[in-house]
Length: 210
Ligand SMILES: C[S@@+](CC[C@H](N)C(=O)[O-])C[C@H]1O[C@@H](n2cnc3c(N)ncnc32)[C@H](O)[C@@H]1O
Image (tube, rainbow, N blue to C red; front, side, top):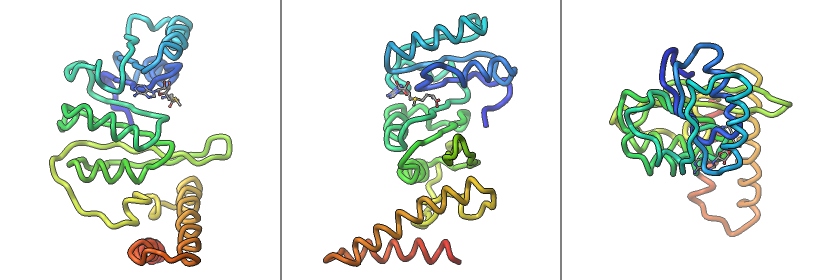
């Protein structure tokens, strides 16, 4: 999803393997690769040295986007964190609300929180993709700021566009999330439950079935 010849900001880069791969295959011209902690910075120094790409990669300590300047990146990757943390990182950097940036986001959990945040804050999700790694399904999405917030159903927030895709990884992702919805419905059915939540969960199942 990263655009050819863009300048990359890789936030939470850890070993910086993604940064290294995108530099080595010629996708990006340069990168700022940042992480909150010193350990990952040392890991990334070893990667950059091993692949001889130190002239194209700047490594930096940064809490989210706080140490990134708005004029030094075009494409911003935040991968391998929870959707809540990714939303918080974006909230703390209002300058990302600009159509020139492409956000490439790979939430490991709470992707519904991230979708809701993006849609509430004027972003459009332009692409979603899934894959299997080591038997687990992972998802990734890209987004641009448009300034327009659009209403979305509970099923769209929970599943994004994956219910309409027919590849195996998307189906596994949808099934995993629907299983949680059914477990929650069962639990609520056995308690003095809040009807509004039961109705919302049923609407999700109905919409996916349709
Ligand atoms: C699981 S690793 C993901 C590494 C890589 N992005 C990937 O997808 O393979 C998560 C990384 O995010 C970093 N991280 C967590 N919170 C962060 C924050 N607020 N700002 C920058 N980096 C953060 C952690 O230190 C860790 O290196």
